[in-house]
Image (cartoon, rainbow, N blue to C red; front, side, top):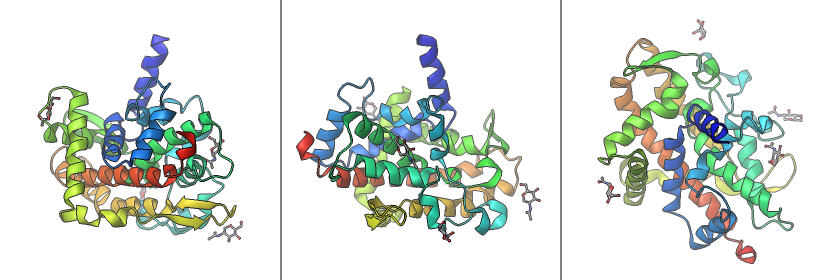
Length: 303
Ligand SMILES: *[C@@H]1O[C@H](CO)[C@@H](O)[C@H](O)[C@H]1NC(C)=O
Ligand SMILES: *[C@@H]1O[C@H](CO)[C@@H](O)[C@H](O)[C@H]1NC(C)=O
Ligand SMILES: *[C@@H]1O[C@H](CO)[C@@H](O)[C@H](O)[C@H]1NC(C)=O
Ligand SMILES: *[C@@H]1O[C@H](CO)[C@@H](O)[C@H](O)[C@H]1NC(C)=O
């Protein structure tokens, strides 16, 4: 059993925003939860081994047990409309929302499944599952390389970050954020660093200064819309989140790297990227809180 757990933890560290990224997203979100969201998520997680922050990486842990969920962690930009050799493309095809397995379809799916407004709510286990997938995917969709078809989202680009040999995808999942977190927090343990970082971003959000002044526009995709395919009402248009993140691939992620693929990405590249990481984590946290507040507003009958 212990060996199994260790293996799961290792898997979680090597895919998607690392645990630091995913935990930070939920730490930011928690700062903006409505009282009903707090009450209801506490209820859903009451028998879980992990609290809401530590549940953020559950979707990575179950990847091998639920292989059908693997493609739901990312989306490739539409191959028919690719610009710049696949660096950034377009998510212009509404059909991506259904029935394909990708992150866009998955967020639509679990939003519907988590929704307390449903006339026939799903059972407890399924509502818990929907929460745990949303905690994760609303984070992943803000990672620019999770919505980019080029070289498997940068997994095939071997790079250097400080004294580490890694790949471009992993740099954006983990290396930049780990360095950023230790820069923001003076604390000594990893867990404390991450909590400080979450607090730091929540403070920026509340201040609404600089790029954070746009925070209301980050959540404008959370609105009611009828899903083209199944005519069910959906609370979110996640394709707009994919487009937003994908734009960063063309402005920063790829061009600054391709200038010199042999550069140490922990130097100049990092200095530009760290502000984008802050912004993307803050966005994900704020979106997650806004979405859950909408879905769980109607949960009174369960609590
Ligand atoms: C497109 O990318 C591939 C592999 O990344 C490369 O070999 C090719 O030269 C690129 N083409 C253009 C037009 O940039
Ligand atoms: C979406 O799918 C429908 C039905 O398969 C098809 O008729 C339509 O052309 C597709 N839309 C796009 C933009 O590809
Ligand atoms: C929607 O969620 C259910 C339950 O996890 C799953 O069986 C189904 O495959 C999901 N569909 C998509 C498109 O993600
Ligand atoms: C570090 O941790 C301590 C104790 O948990 C906390 O009081 C403090 O606010 C944290 N942050 C910084 C930047 O010291």
